[in-house]
Length: 391
Image (tube, rainbow, N blue to C red; front, side, top):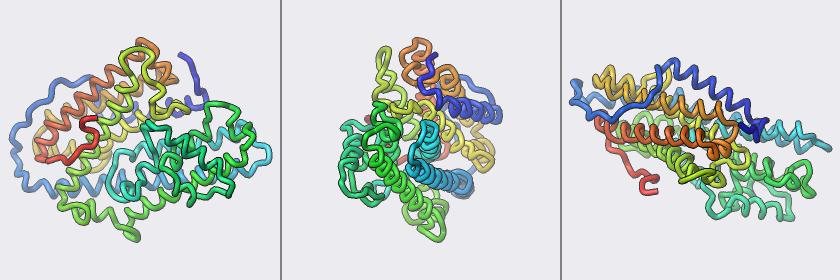
């Protein structure tokens, strides 16, 4: 194994311990078999909206709002760290590392709620302003470089007006983790301008995080009530659940296809250059966070989960067990990959790493089939348009 990013190794280990604890609570892993066609529920499905209402309340209060609160908190820390670093006359590599770690923390917070595509996050291009990826037209580098050429002092308002590639997480990654060390915030000839732009981008992310969180609060848009009660953007409580399930399934497909399968490629060393976080090599860590979230969405942690609705209300123990087994299996597999390889690039070039990633992709496809067929049939859900279909 080669530790290409030794400073980023600790979070991989922490996420591994987190998964170990999570999996212990949910049961063992292992690959599930073919999905089972659900039997007719013994409980009247007309009572499902009540169950769904409890699920939505617990998910919103226990996962969605706390995730946006964490994202806002990490955005505050990111901006504060940037102010501290850029205020130093002669910053050291250790000072830069502190700034970089706050970027990693903010990205991790975003990855835990990246799946959700309702509310303010999908308005005013906020989803893409936070993170434009894949970046097939080099929009990130073009956006940042255009800001660096500005003769005026660049502010968050200026950033919010450039192309979305220059506004968010990838843009800040481009500045904080440059491919060429001569472009470092410590060594670059224009380091003052680079600091200025980095602070403007950090403030832009803070503004966006604040706008999204406010939308979910009673004093703001009160999107919480809309989702839970099935009003506003939703026609009913069932519609709310169908929308969230569509988001959930779509993001599982994105992780399986865009983050793993397409990067794996047909042969070694794969297509690492197209990975989500090439400069920081945090792609596998982000995938681990995504998968941890998928399990939380299903079980709702300590609240009313889909698993309890299937088992206790619909008496669909087999389907629930299959989904739980598949979810815990993919969690176990990504944890092991993160333990075995310090770099996505190294894993993609290694025969055992490629086999492990292939097995993970296969298990995620089983999971997708279980949710798309058995799960939706058992809960009598009609999923909406999935933007990842046909990709």
